[in-house]
Image (cartoon, rainbow, N blue to C red; front, side, top):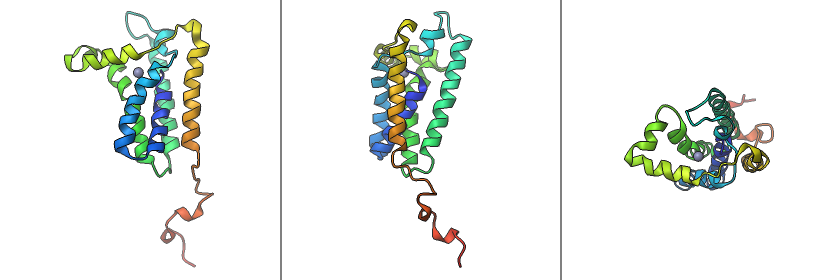
Length: 172
Ligand SMILES: [Zn+2]
């Protein structure tokens, strides 16, 4: 699955579970669950057996920037901000370890981590580009659900003017 749904799902888990000791392991496990859902990723679209292609790398960078940007925006001003940011990190860390250059190749072969990489790749349900509608819909659904959870009940300063400490306001 792309990075953006993983990151947003992690933030949503952080917001719902609130406690780091609960949210962060749950976010880590969510990575495998989401990779099990049928999805289309950049490797299926642009990848080659010989290695990472330019379009694949470009899509990965755009995906990362969009996902991280959305998480930072969603977590802004939330009471569970720290847990949300941590959970988003735990939700994506598997792909960062396993797929990012230059340590991805090493992570896949080092005996202490190779089993985890094999487990991660064994969970993937990658679709061929011909089945893109399903591969896109599953990821859009994850993004939409996560956005809904993260935005639900989010207080804006305009709605809650009393959130700022009164000492910062000018005294009459
Ligand atoms: Zn993954």
